[in-house]
Length: 399
Image (cartoon, one colour):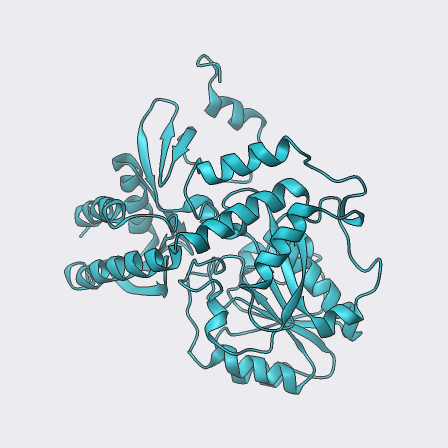
């Protein structure tokens, strides 16, 4: 970029003002670090909202992009013609998806995946109502915003899409009370991410799966934030034996390249007809090549072991902090490298976030008081310690 160009002023003038912007212009990245236009280095504990699972500027992704773009980026007739990269990715995913999820469609984002799952669940059941949970987040399309259980993400867009019912998260009896023969699906996150990294009771997903099966209702598992080793397993829900109709995926599926997917059972696939769904890209060769490279890297380099090790290391540090900063920290929770540090108040949380930025650490805050730690899954103990030291210094300033 032309060094005489003022990136911040241009974005402020021309970019749609939908974000409360951070006054930093990031020029490049390397692993868990990013660098601004002045060369200042920041340790990234946000992974670009959870997508850069194998780090910034990964040579794995760069190589896949270069090699595939030199062949073909978009098929003629798109999904109507066959594609070797798509076939390779389908085969790879078939080996890691939870049992029973055998058919896959590729999308451009998590919101698009959720939107499609809701649409198809209604179509094949002939039912209208969809049950969602309070404090959930499922996307920013009008349909997925309508399915989101947070008023701040939903109510400003009236009139919303109808036929969504909301119940408290983690409360199986609340869902039991609303399930009727007019409910097509229940959509739920295995752990609520944007809602503050809320972990449900251990029995919640198995009980919900059984309840849905008993009532002929499809369970839609939104694994967009929790999938692809973020919580330690390839999918957060896979440690349970669940009866899942739809699973939606994005974020870590392609390491930062815009890509998503949803998977369904064979039984559901048999009820889907030609023309029920589609898309311009629907698994274009470029996206598929990148996704395959990222997932293969996660498997071949045993990244799950690293997630387990670094996660335990961070939680051990945080356990000590709860005693040291008891007046500031309300609770520590999460799984794998999806970790919440809930603070006592929003003003202090914002001050700590700003202090961390000044010291070279980028952290994400959700729900006003929850510091969300979700770095690249490849982060080392040393890099994690560097970030935790900065965060501790910021906490100490406000203790």
